[in-house]
Length: 313
View 1 (cartoon, rainbow, N blue to C red):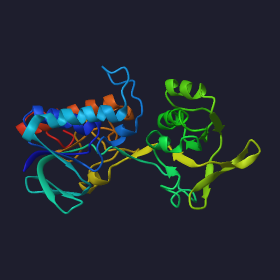
View 2: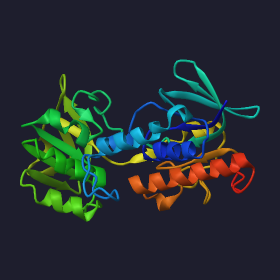
View 3: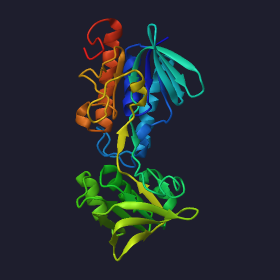
View 4: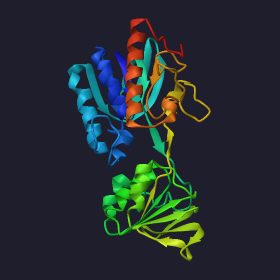
């Protein structure tokens, strides 16, 4: 039986593993996707110590550090299908059917991309509709694309896409963008970005692949925009499906409720990163890493029988 099971391979999960390994805890680190949402960040300019670094490179550094502790960290790339209470701890069931037991759990499952829920979105997913502009912009070199959203991921995605695309429509339902000023300045400096504000996309159109989107109000004389790809960047929701299997409590916004030690209402269960109510819902590399280190410290104290007792103590 492992001392701690860490579910999630992003900033919070890797950091938690670094700290649990330093505490000499037998750690099982598992997740379906290496790097998590961190891999979608084309440029990271706010990680202390690096004036600028690419998201995938930063996540690779995290991973290498977490795996530098030899046998203390067991690493597995796998979907986690179930988590359950057992005598003396918890049991994970992986997608393969394999089971793994641990005395404690740290959930670092992050968040999942929101969908628009409009006609054509599902039908053309992977055929011109994607949910990561910074990941997929390269495939639309010289083409016309739309980025939907007004937050950091959308505005950053539009700036990145504009480096390779012929034209980028940045579509947002409000009058003002709500992204970090740095990224707003970036998109305003790009001559090939067209701002389609105070409008909603109501349908994705196409034949074998996307060729247009339909708007709720005309733009430049038409309610259809002819294009080759659509990047939907309208935010994300906390990935709390697994914690809910243990009846972990959520806050009114649907995030996993944690205390100052990153403990949930279930003894022995901790959480860190974008899925939690911590850090004022400020989803950043730095806050996720901070929560991961605190959660690891709380696990150590919990297993030692002192300090944080779990269960919101």
